Length: 125
Image (tube, rainbow, N blue to C red; front, side, top):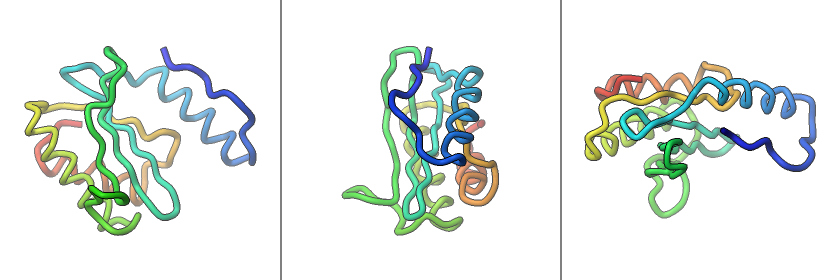
């Protein structure tokens, strides 16, 4: 069960995205055999977390910023690099399937490139 966010959300588009995100999370649940891949996109960066909802833990994350950055920016090419690294780490943990949580974002552009890159590298999403 996902908790509802606390506090006010500013802006109409943020409110719509939050509503979409909560309705998606009602249906998408990650397990230890099939974890949830959650994408978070900002104007500058992209983060993908692999989450086991049964135990409530994040297994690992791949992002375009920080010490362990795999790409430099949030564009389609950067998303492909993040997806490839994500698939590589999933394979190293012997996970062959996952579910995708688009977190209220439209399935186009960077988000679509991320998922297709994970699929191309052998993970069933």
